[in-house]
Image 1 (cartoon, one colour):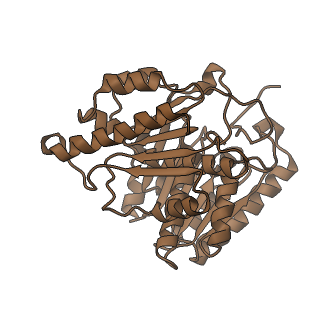
Image 2 (tube, rainbow, N blue to C red):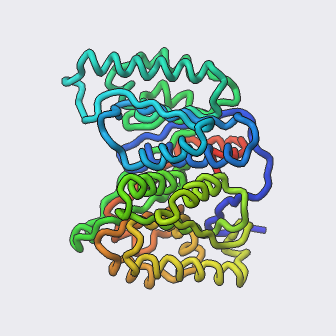
Length: 378
């Protein structure tokens, strides 16, 4: 049977890979650090439902010093309180941006401190995932020796997953990466002319779209925890029915502690939907999801709404475009909406995006026959 259109892999039982991969997220577009946070959320979720301590995550953040608060801090702190055996976070560097001509001894010392932590974590065997957030610009600024970093990553334990993020990843790092997703920004004059803000779209063939949206959700949940009443989050996911998604456990844990902050809904069959394999239930489930999302957008109750895999749902013609356009045009000004998923034909609501990142695939281990992994890919 010929598969036409866009198909989304679900979390059905499948063989998993055991060998960890090296991921690099770079580019001028938004979504790189968010993608890393999304992997953190999935990994913690996997660990919650796994009786062993084999799913510990280190979130090591360069250029993000502890004197500045980040939106996601509240959510990470809440997960650390609930599951201290599953996540460690270390932050190094200054909290403000600086260029090559403004580098100080402090910057070099902080980069070296962070790298010492990274080397120890990689060698320890204690972690299943090590996130090196913003290490790419650290290398680009010359704060760490590229050859040493590359050599260390190449000799990592076989099962360890490494996530490296930030602009300007050096070529030597890209050469050893198993996955390289570049976030490319696109700009829409219509959104600017209409003074529309708060609509973000992540699309493209590379890995990092839903993962970035999960990271965005984690940031919004953290904001709601840090500032009660400031935000409520809805995570609405299409084409992802069934169970087995590792982020669910982490989201559920946050819901239990902070029921006023986050809601999470899934719709669709536990099956890959192609254009020539659509069933009546696919239309019913897509419409059910849209009814929930439409009311949430109009209500003003939610300050952050994730519409995960809405793009392929529209591309498969399971939902019409015009009602989505109208809902986005009428959204409250302080409601941010994040839309994800690849599509063959960009629907007209793309013109309303104030942020549009195309996740361009330079490398993906799945294209080399490498299986996906629970806690990282789904």
